[in-house]
Image (tube, rainbow, N blue to C red):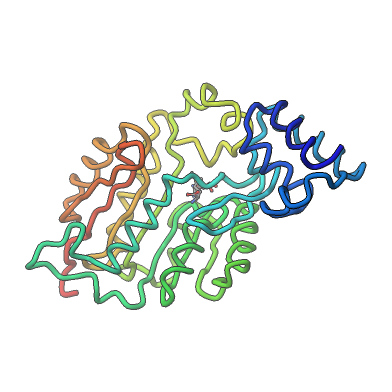
Length: 300
Ligand SMILES: C[S@@+](CC[C@H](N)C(=O)[O-])C[C@H]1O[C@@H](n2cnc3c(N)ncnc32)[C@H](O)[C@@H]1O
């Protein structure tokens, strides 16, 4: 079988041309252009076996990213493994939110008389639940003087995250820490020092996990999905602790699930520790990211 025939066959089997292309490229270890440059090149027995196995796995709903071991996020390639959540395009709005605050603080929520965040030359950023490190490594790549602390409860996810940081040559600016939310930060003298506290926490309602598409329900790590009985348990914990860690005018930036913006906003307001809250919609007009600015603390 040659490349052209293999592509047609894979397309037929998966009923999805884009996936067929990705799978074939991954099994042959080639780039896009090579797929079409030499369509009559025959596949070796080894390559055919790889492809057949990959098609079967995909038909069993194993996510494409776990088969290829790769996922793109913010135009950067990330290795993913079964122990890591697969980065989603909507999470890029977290990176955008931080990036916009640093570049153009006036464009989002700052009033004229408020202290601009443009003074943030060397931001200290915390990423809670870093997974494969996509948010942390992307921020480190695009914000050259940032110092980032990335935590996760999963040791295996952190190993992948460290590999991704090395891949993007930002490992010297990210400290990876294993543990439960803020606990690995406790003795690091970070209280009142954080400019941006970001997180895409687990936020699926526990009883709804099994009804998600099989790609997610059967294969993505439960600890990356399970947001407790009402899906909000991580927001409660993060919002309670965040004020201790954020500096005056530091930002809390959280990804949200569908319909979670109102309750999360209310939680943030109730603390009386934040002065302005903005909600950013994603490509589908879903309220996806909440950005809250810490009020001025004491004499800071
Ligand atoms: C939805 S995933 C987000 C992964 C990645 N940051 C992203 O946006 O694609 C949530 C992550 O939180 C981690 N996690 C779950 N419970 C945690 C906890 N108690 N403390 C720290 N991390 C936790 C999971 O292992 C998972 O990597």
